[in-house]
Image 1 (cartoon, rainbow, N blue to C red):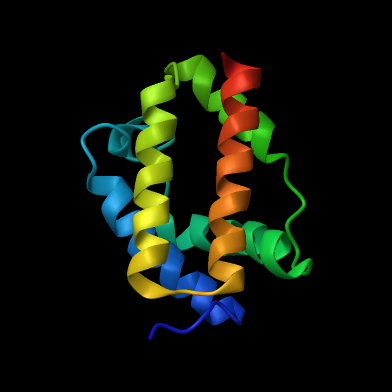
Image 2 (spheres, one colour):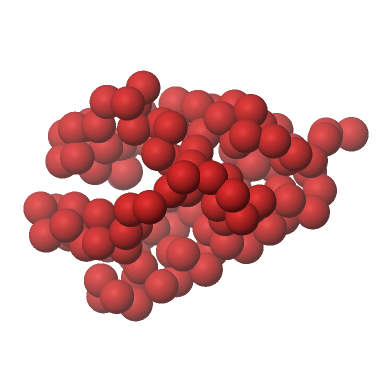
Length: 122
């Protein structure tokens, strides 16, 4: 049986696995590699901070995640199918590595965030 997400290190493992898939995905990869042009090693600590705040209510995330994605949306429209691809990859990555209350919470929070972003950017 897989273990649950219990620490920042688990989130880091998960985010590295997810971004390995997302960056090479033909539907959403270009948002990261061409539009946002992210440096994953520099960006990853911020992403981990964000999810640590979502799961454990701690961490140093201070940015406006919605505004970041709205700015990206002005450069290239983020369509509903992009969100669905992201969410599917995210959920699959979680399921491949973890199981339990926090893993389920992470999937629920991701769905909530995607829902709000789709409404705000629609």
